[in-house]
Length: 367
Image 1: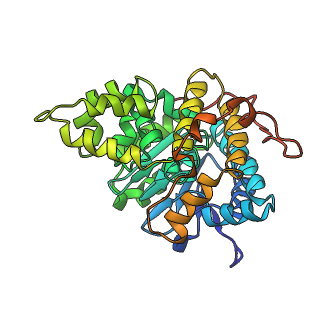
Image 2 (image 1 turned 120 degrees about the vertical axis):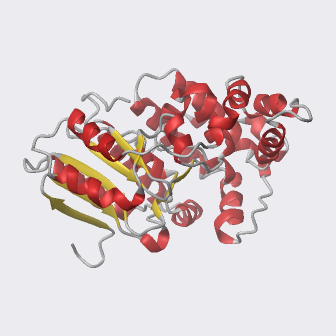
Image 3 (image 1 turned 90 degrees about the vertical axis):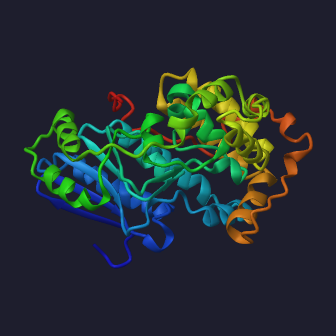
C-alpha cells in the first residue's frame, strides 16, 4: 500500500480485507476512495485464493460516516462535476457489492451513516457491534437517503425503514437488526477473532459457511428503541409520509407509554428539510414498488444531482458541517416543497450519464 492511499487491501488466508483508512474523517468516502475500493474489490473477486471479502473501517470510532459532504458542497457550488462522478461511481460499486459472486461481510463497527450504510446494507453478511450507531441523516441536510436506501428501507418491517429515512434519527445495533439492515451482533473485541475464522475457511467459501462462522461469535444485542416503540412506529410510519406520521404522533395522549417518543419525533420531523421530506417520501414509494436495486440507484442519482440545484442542500450543509450552528433556515419552508416536479427531478440529465452496473445480471445477495 502506498502511504497516500485511503483503502488498505490485504489478504489473510482465504479472506480479502478492505479497510477504509481515513480514520481522522471517520472514514468518510470521496471519489478517490471509491476508485480504490472498486479496484481492490475487483482484484479480490478475480483472485482464486480469496474465498470471502470483508469491508471494515480503520480506527475505533466508525465504519464509515458517509460521503465527504464538504467536497460535494464545494463541487456543487463550483459545478466541477466531481459530485456527479462520485455518486455515479459510488452507486455502481454498491451494486457490485450486492451482486458479488463471493461472500461479502461488512463489519459495521462504530458510526455507520449514509454512504457507510450503502457499503454495508446490501451485502450478504452484515455484522454490527455493541458500538454501532446507524443513521440515514440526509433529510437534515436538504438531501435524500441514497446509496440504495430507497430500495432497502421500504422493505424494513413495521415502518422502521421509513422512520429512519424520514427522521434521520440515530439508532443502535438491535434496531439495525430489527430493520433488516444487519444480520447479527458480534462484540467489537472479537472482530479480530471473527476475521481469523473467516480467513481459515476453505476456498471457495459458501454463504452458509460464512453464516455459520458469524453465528458462532454472535451475541444478543441490548433492546433498542424499536423494541419499545414498534407499535407506535408501525401506526405512524406506514400511514404515509412525514406529515401523516406527525399527525398520528400528535394524537398520542398524556400518560401513553409513547408520549415522550411521539413529542420528540414530531419535533425532530419539524426540523427536517420540507423539500427533502417530500422527495424522500416519493422515492420510498417508488422504491417499494421496484424489483431491482439498480432502478432505485438510478433514481437516486438523478435526484442527488438535482439537489445540487436546490438551496436547501447548501443551507443544510452550512448548518450541519460548515457553521455548525444546527439551525438551518430552509428555503423550502414556505411552499417550495409543494412545487416539487418529480418527473423533472427523475428525468435523464443531459450531459450527465447514469451509473453503469457491470454485474446487474447476477443474482443479488438475499436477506
